[in-house]
Length: 452
Image 1 (cartoon, rainbow, N blue to C red):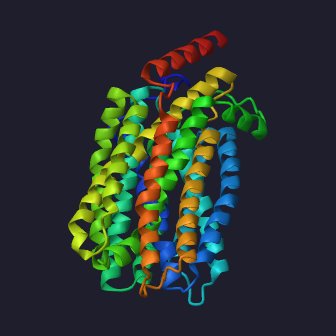
Image 2 (cartoon, rainbow, N blue to C red):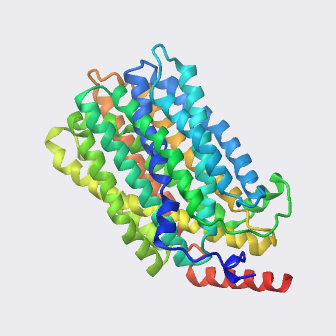
């Protein structure tokens, strides 16, 4: 058998392979961060659902969704067949993602809380059924420390492109009409583009064959994952930092309209933020390869703390330029948040394989990663909407009390700073660097060679 077909030597990837692999990230990006930016606000302001009720639904749906992630990750690892372990999931989940995206963004008249809860759950499950195998697929496309940064960077840059397109579309259209019309068009885009991009990915990108699974139980796999010390540190820091990022994302529209007082600039500010993230991603990928992914990520979080400190000074329209600079600065940090932790995740999977002798449980690890992502976003949305409801913040856009505006600023700026400082502490002296990862891969290759 050729080396390129062995589990230890995945096929060499061209730019076309990387582009096709990253392609699905563009349309499904609309079901990620833009969902939390626009959809809860839309259901609160235009559909008329209570902010507190939305917060409860978001948390409960994420709990159920997290259980589904674990099952999907496990099944993805166990999927047999000539087409690979990951391709069938990406292909079969894309129609469900397309349908649910359209439904949640184009609610019929009289849509209630049950409608929001049901379609939020379905769109989350469909999103996970694509992104889990896609992310695990990317981790398996290269065993190399640097190569994984490159693959992750391509995928996450495509994600930012999708987010910019979604935010620009909704921001631009909502200024000339209603948020309902803008989300309807975004839903149509996601419904059409998702199956097309997933189909091209499955057609072009190789799905490296893996070692046969040992058929260990889900419980046994979870026990091994949670016994992986570097993984626990990484995912813990990722959750804490994810809440820190999720709060500004969830509250952005409220902050711009009610604290900054420039609702007419929402599209420009969001586009600037994501464009800065897009442009900075290659830099953070280079910095992570040069100095280590963990150190580069910590530097990015320190930078974000400084930027959010400046955002505390924003109290009205006179600070528009300052907030524009905040959007640029926080966007620059975004590039690190989306590229570096996910690339580190692939490295801790190698450690699991070395310690347990099991076939790579990449799908299960990325399922836990997905649970962490959703948990962080749900906790951020629950905390944000919950606290605003407690202090009497008017989500319908009416006059706000000084206490409500101060709470909004604290949630948007101060709380993320504190959380990021905690995440930085958790990542100090992370044990897997380039040299250690090379040692782990060499030990795995030696063991595989001895087992032949």
